[in-house]
Picture 1 (cartoon, rainbow over the protein chains, first blue to last red):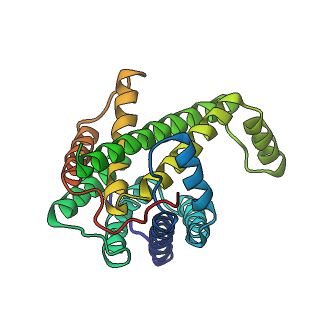
Picture 2 (picture 1 turned 90 degrees about the horizontal axis):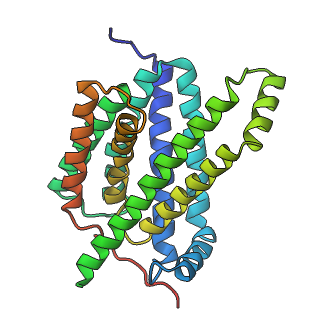
Length: 128
Length: 141
């Protein structure tokens, strides 16, 4: 049976996806600003994490991801989980668009194909 | 080892750590909350649920794994593309399905197996692209 989603839920879903993606993009930008650890050794990674937590972009991202999580809880109280979680797979497409146009990552055709397959796959798995 | 290959290997190692931490953390959280039982949405019920969660060893181990996921995610994003790491993280769905089948003997529907297969092929495609396509700052020594 097709479940009709209300306008209120559709808008909340859009804000949930946008806030989550913008939050993750902000954190990614912050991590790039912090600079990668030279080696994957405890000392280098600890120093990196120290720099990362002092990055402003990290603290821009965290409230956005918190808002996204809160909206997920709200959505789950309005709509069936079998609709909300598969719909949240849209984050893969929105996140990739953000990575391409905001972070200026080079998203080629192969990566787009992979992202779309993952998006459909996650929606199917999450639908149960 | 060439820079490109080294980058790919360390990215895959960190994605593996991410997926293991997230899957283990989520599974332990589920196990811990099942042990606690349903939390009623009343003041007393929420307080009791919170105290029970905070005194559960399983929940604390789950939290440690989820912190491990967050830190490994932050670390890999310091050099790798978000559009590379994010889809690769979906391997968690595959891991959860395999754990369900082989550890708990769960039955998985053909539709779910189709989803798992699509995720695997999608991650394989993404894995064929370069993990890093933007300039990355060198760490301050």
